[in-house]
Length: 242
Image 1 (tube, helix red, strand yellow):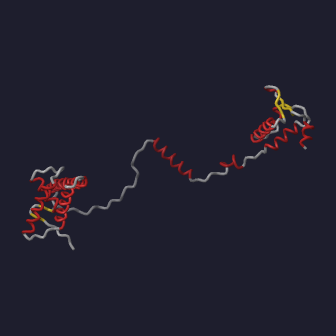
Image 2 (image 1 turned 120 degrees about the vertical axis):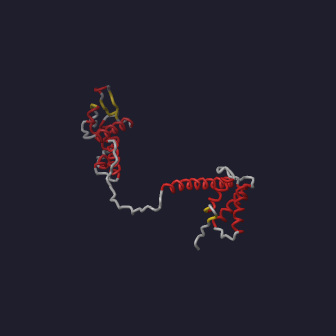
Image 3 (image 1 turned 180 degrees about the vertical axis):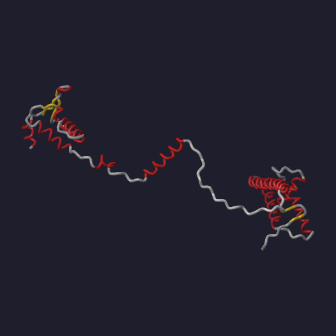
């Protein structure tokens, strides 16, 4: 069904009628007296019915809305009523501003003028903003960094973990014991002379620590004069272990 638009004298819709009643009775639009406004609004509805005028549904909806607000305000806690009243005040303020703007525009615009259709203009897609050089550099570096995160790591990245030669501490213990087999002492630094890389140096040092901890060898002397010696002799201790 087509919606009925109703006009009564100078009123267009329920908001227009409410705004007229507020201005007529000098009510505060920010704090509306709902009971007084409802009585006068219902009086206008009654006059419409007496004149056998067909009342639009929006007028009746507003009447039920005012009744709901008034009923809610009778409750001990009427926060909901205050919220509905603020919402109605906001709509009336917006409607009043729209009427004021429409009045101004109606004085400036004449509908007798001919207006041509808007011309289709090709959009200019060129980027015209200006930026500081440092800003562009930082943006470029940030973009490059995000791109590198998606690239899988190369083999070189794992070379220090995967390709590193594993040196057994046990093998270095045997090597140190072979050097001390004759039972004579040797220079402490001489046990590291055959180490080819860091892994062998670390494994040799750990081997010496294990031998000292197990009371198999001892370190004698100080500084550059330090020497390494078997505690119980070389050949005899080796034969006992066998």
